[in-house]
Structures are given as C-alpha cells and as structure tokens.
Amino acid sequence: MTNRTSPTPASILVTGDVLRETRIYEGDRTQPFSRQALGTQSSTAWAQEKLFQVINHRYNARLPTVVTTNLPVDRLDDRLRMRLTDPALARVYHVEASAPAVDLGALDALDLARVREMTFENFDTRLPHLTQEQRLNVERAWRASLNFAEAPENWLVLEGGHGCGKTHLAAAIANHRRALGEKPLFLVVPDLLDFLRHTMERDSRASFFDVFENIRSAPLLILDDLGAQSDVGWVRDRLFQLINHRYAARLPTVFTISTDAFDRMEERLLSRLFDPNISLELPVNAPAYLVDLDPQSHAPNRGGRQQSSRTRGPARGSRAGETRPFRGSPPPERDGR
Image (cartoon, rainbow, N blue to C red; front, top):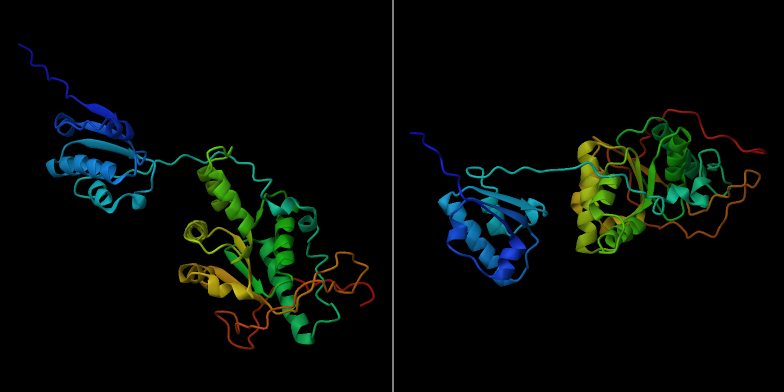
C-alpha cells in the first residue's frame, strides 16, 4: 500500500484585501500562507493592530510564512520589524532590479546654454579687481578642478561666497568630461528635490525609485548649490540617502556650497562631505563676480552679490597658510595681459 503525503494547505492573501473584509479566522492564522504586499494596507490603528495580531501569532507559533513588502524594512512598524527580521526565525531577502534608463534631460543643467559655455578656457583668474592673494587662490582652485576633470576620482567640494566662480568650475569639469564622450550629470540641488517630489505624484510619467537610482548611481555627478534646499525632514532624508550612497560606493562627485550654507547642514552630512579619505575641500576665496565669457573683455561683470564676509578658516586637513600641491599647467594668460 502506497503512502501518499497529503498536500499542505496554504493561503495566499493580499494584506489590504484581508483587512478590508475584516475576516480574520483562526484557520487563517494556523495554516501556512504567503502574505503579499505588506505596506499596502490601511494605516488606521485598527488595521495595524489586526495585522500585528496575525503576524505575532504566527511568530510565536513558528508557523511557515512568506511576507512581501514594498517598504524598506526600517520603515515598518517597530513591532512588526522585530518579528519579521528576527535572525532566529526569519530570512530577509532584498530583491532589486536594475533601474530602467530615465531621461533626465529636463533636469540636467548642463543642457542650458549658459552652463554649456562655462569651460576652463574662459574662466578668468587674472581679473584686475583681484588681490594677489585672491588671484593665487583662484588659480589653485582652477588647477585642482582641471586635475579632477582629467581623472575624476572621489569627491571635490568647492566652497565660497556667492558668485565667486564655484559653479563655473563645476560646470567646466562636466563640460570637459562631456567633450570626451561621457555623460556627466549636472544638477542644481533645489531643482533636483522639486523634481523628485513631482515623481512621487500619481500622474508622474517617471517612477521616483527609477529616477533616484539613476541619479545616485551616475558615473559622475555634480551637485550645484548644496545647502540652498528647504530644511524639511523629507528633503534632508532624501539628500542624505543620495550622498551616503555615493560616499559608500566612492563614486566621483562634485559639490558646490556657499559659505553661509554650512550652518543649515546636518552633522551626518558634513561628516561625509569633509571626510579627508574621500573628499578634497577647495575654498574659493574671491569676491563675487560673474565671469564675462567674451575672451576679448577683461572687465568683470559687477552684477553679482558680494561674497559673505564670514570665513571658515583653512580647509579641513590643512594648516593655516599651507598650500596644497596641484598638478597641471597654470591658467592661460589673456591677450593684453
């Protein structure tokens, strides 16, 4: 006589449907089942409590259970997370798919005419209103930026007052790499965060997760005007996720930061931005001016705001008066100089 093993009864339940029907039977809590789409249920106190009762019962009884969720584990309710991630009982698998290519052309500032014109060749380091000390500082910034453009590695942080040339140097790096056939991504931080918020709307054509993955994994990313974004929790968290990912992966990144923005930044962000193991901090100590891109003109455009009088002292990792070594040729002399 042949013994046949009876199939084990199982249920596949969609969390939201179960809770909407409000029918949670003891039978449903004792047979093996797969609970799908955890995180899509109602967030009411009643729904959260019923869900916890089901999972807690199966946890205590050590009943076979499969759970899927569209939420990061750290965003689940503390009680659920403790049970679903208990290493003595649970195995957690992160299923990731490669993010599809997303057209970021509307967001990439490198496609703007003015930014495309910003190159190392038309960055004037010898404007007559600069003092000798300021001229030497700007020349060092020019050389360091060119060195980075020739071989992007780790991070470059350009900091200084408004209008001192930070964005021009950052754009010159991006334009240099684009001329070599690469696809750097040049993003203005407040615009980036507005765009990400828009992708979370239901009628958005682009998925937030796809856009975010394409940005945080870009081979070369330039983040312009870091610190000018609004200071709300969602913004701080998304910005930290982006920067922390590139920090952990050591992906080449350029930041421009105005001097008056540091007080608005979180310590967890600053600790990564100025880690000397990955980041070169490059102060641009020049008064505000807008470089005239006409090579025949030597007079600075004085329409920019004056640099903040606040100073931050020598760059981290350097002593006062110390000059860091730079490779590369000095900036080109202009005709008539």
